[in-house]
Length: 171
Image (cartoon, rainbow, N blue to C red; front, side, top):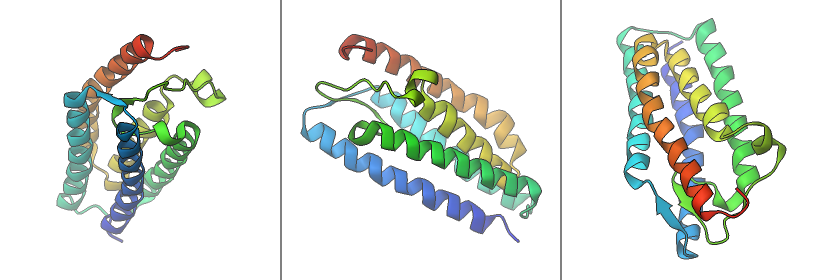
C-alpha cells in the first residue's frame, strides 16, 4: 500500500489542531492579547509545512510503501497527537501555534507542565516530525530537515521563556 493515504490521514488530523489554534488566536486578540515573535512563528510554520511536503516528496520519489517502519511511525504520530490533545486540553483557550500572551495570562501548573518543560514541543512537535519522516521513510529529510527545524524551535522556546518571565506573573 502507498504511504500517501497514511500521510493524508496524518495531515488531516494535524489540520484540526490548526483550526483550534486559529479560533483561540481570534478570541485572544479580540480580548487584547499580544502576539510576540511573529517572524519566528512564520518561519516555524513554513518549516513545518516544508518538512511535511519534503517527507511526502522523498517518500513518493523513492517509491516507498507502508511497511513496519511506517506503521511504527503511525503509532508515534498517534502518541504525538495524544500529547497535543493533552496540551490543548490543559491550556484551553490560550493554546495557539503562535506566541500570544493574554491579559492576565494564566500559568499552568498541572503535572504535565510541572514535570516537562514545553511539552508541546518535546512531546508533540518533535515526535510528530520524526513520525512523518518514518511514515514516508524520508531519511534525508529527517537527517537534514529536523536539525534545521530545531533552530527556529530553539528560538521559539527562548522567546517564550523570555516573554513569560517578563509579562506573566508566577512564571
